[in-house]
Each structure stands twice: as C-alpha cells, then as structure tokens.
Length: 309
Image (cartoon, rainbow, N blue to C red):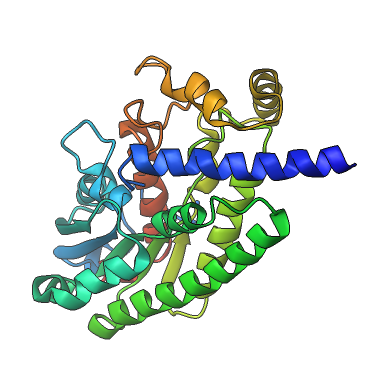
C-alpha cells in the first residue's frame, strides 16, 4: 500500500513536469437546430451585415493552423456568410499565451477593441488553458497529492474570479450580444490515455468555467473538450485499445523520458491525434480548427438572436 501511495505521488509530480515541458515548448501557446440544410427560417428578419468579435488566447489567434484561415475565426466568417447569406465583419483579438486576466487587460487598455466589442452582434471566446498551465507550473515541486489538490482548488477559485472580471468587462461594453465560450481540452490524452490526472484536471477546470458561465445571460458553452482530446479515437473500443497501448509504452507512469520518447522524438508527421498540430503536439491543426468552427456555428444557430434585426 505504501508503495502504491508513493507511486501515485511520483506519477502526479511527473505529470506536472510533462505539462511544464508542453508549456515551455509551445511558448504558452496553449452540439440544436442548424441551417446546414435549407434556407434560414427567419430570412426576412436577418441582418445584412453581422459583426463578430473573437477574444482569447492562442486558440483564437489560430496557432497551429498552417492555412490562411486564422484558426476558427476565418472559417467561421466564411461559414456564416455561406450558410446564412449575410456579410460578416470579423475581428480577431486572440493573443498566444494570454491568461484570463491578460485578455481582460488588453480589452481595458484598447479603445479599438472596446469599440468593436460594443458594435458586435456575437462574441466568441477561448480562455482558461493558460490559467491552468500556469497553476500546474507553480506547483510542480509539490510531491503530496493532498497538497497539490489544495493548491488546484485554490487556483480554481482564483481563476473563477478572474473569469468573472473578464466577462463583466465584456458585458460592460456589450450587455446583450450572445457570448459563445469554448471549453479547453487535454492535448496529451492519446499518448497517456491510461492516466486520468490530466483529463481530470481539464474536466475540473471546464466545470469551473461552466459554473461561472451560468450566472450570465446569453452566454453559451461550446464543448470541444472530448472531441479534440480523443481525436479520431471516438468509440469505446478504440479508446480501450488506446489505453492498452499507452499502458504498454509508459507502464502507468509519466516521466520526462517517456514523454520525449513518445511525443517529442517522433517525426513531425507522426502526431497521433489527427486534430492536433504535429509542429507542437498541442494546438489544433486545420482539421481541429474546422471542428471548432462546426461546433461554435451549431451553437450560434441554436441561439440566433445575433443574426436577427
């Protein structure tokens, strides 16, 4: 039993080390009715021009996208134009590495951002991934699971307060436009599917975001956590096979060595998750951003007030 507890502590600390490596390597880049078939039922009342603002971190900036579509924002602009037959003015204010408080500070300090948020009919956001990475980095030396859990719980409260300030600031400049807020995902799931710590941390962080979002009107969650985490391994059978394969490779342990051997030493074309970039094994690739676009567009069509006069 003592050995099992000791192994649990070692795995927990090693897990944090892996996430810190990810953060350093990426420079802190960290489904309703649709109109996909047939004409929009409220075509007469549609706007001729809609303004959409994208706020957030590297996922909004489009890091990992090797095309000229700027991640999900460029694709969303095209999809709205094609499906809803309206002109779309899109403003992308994503910045790689930004935490929730840094996104808010940029908005507070920028009159142009404020004006565009004020004029927008819809707001799309990515936030939270860098807050979680910062928390794990600060606590990387903790070797007791109970202490680590205490620190993570405290960090979630801090993050919740920062997220509230960000959302309050957005609402200060635009009280009514619907906000579509993405969840975060686990970028290393396909390599460590047999170890639950990262997935649990991501799930807890998303739960905090969702709980906070419920206190705001016209704020809708866009849940991409599972589809981007599991990638093409969608079925229970595929995931069970993935867990067995992961167990054979890492023997239930995460270390710098197994991480490097499994991911970093692989050829750039060998990313195991078809939805993530082989350049950093962290951000979505073009396929991943197309998925993000489909998910947010579906949610936007389910809450279409932004599209109507």
